[in-house]
Image (cartoon, rainbow, N blue to C red):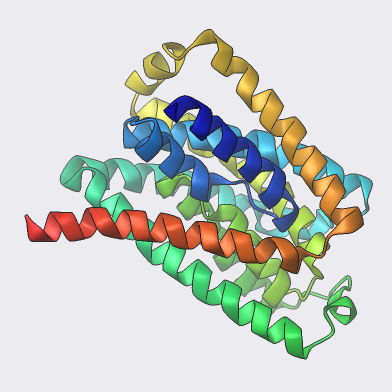
Length: 273
């Protein structure tokens, strides 16, 4: 029963959140960890693998619609790649010292910030015309510095806890570059597609036992990433044509809140002990 529920969560996440510029790791990690009972490190790496396939599918859909700005994605890519490697190293250090608890605290902080930023952005969009924000911006030195620092943070988040990069990259595209929602999402995937493989490789090099754990999974699991890719492509194509992002943002924030509460429950139990 747990397996079918987990599959449903993964496919719905891939379909619904792909239009938002998100890989779905915010739900993939707790699905593997809490529902299937996997080790946290294995959950993070497995989540990253699915995030990459979501990114491929959704990037393709956004590309077909003309919603990617390639030269902008390249500007933050190098620091994001470095951040992914650094994040994986930090994850190993924190896990060795504090086991799962430190990574859960990081996840709690990030999820709380995501909810705050998401609600703030929804309020702002009620007061502004988002269609007027879409442009091909001139990026001065100060703006470029802020953008690259943000991309570094997004890369660290991907390597550290297996999610958060898409959220951060999309937010940067919306708030710093003032892209409209679909273009912010499409450009975010340009970075995510490069960052995730680096994070996965670093985790596997740091903890080789993860390779054996991945190979030990059911042979049918090899088909899941391709189904996820198709779901992400379909979801992005559908939303771009038919749905405003606001419609999907509310269930996304609700899902983030559920994940936040679940991590908080673990920390509260730890404190009571």
